[in-house]
Image (cartoon, rainbow, N blue to C red; front, side, top):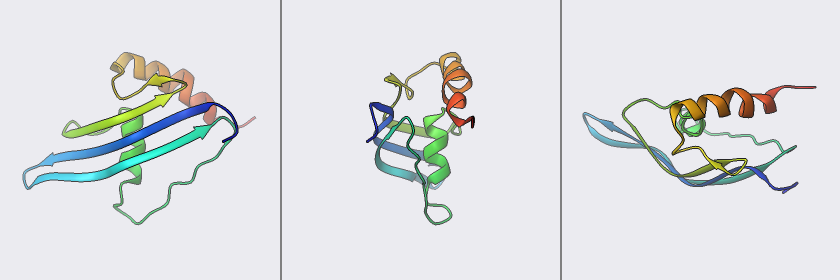
Length: 100
């Protein structure tokens, strides 16, 4: 790791309640990402890549159940309010996607 974690994810799970029962989209993801590091998420179509990232941003569908822990700069994302997530997405996470 290049420095203190920018993003820490522990035991992330994403499930969806459907008419046919519970569908598990993401199971037990752990990752650390430090400032200056890059991370590639690869997998087959339907393997949960997008749902994993959407869950970190608080943008999953209403029928989703997200458990585990996801910390951005030490702040828990999964239990943050919608207004706080908007702040984090806008002034925190988005600032790291800009290229100099």
